[in-house]
Length: 81
Image: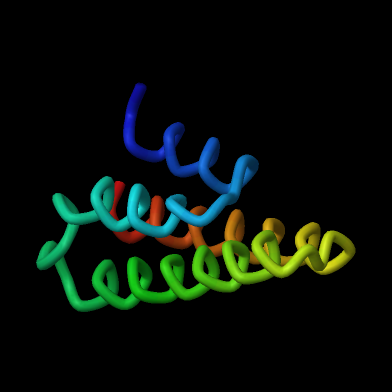
């Protein structure tokens, strides 16, 4: 499974360890360009937000957080791919 497919799965499943798994998957992309580094950081922020919402049981807000994470992932694909 390619890293982007795995990241999409992490967005859907969320969970406390999703951020660490995403960080591990994205470590190979670090340093490719300033724009890619910024996109990685923004994606990780969205994943942290999603993890927080999942852990705190705020289900209605998770849909919006997942949408934002998907948008950030799309942006990341553009800058890396």
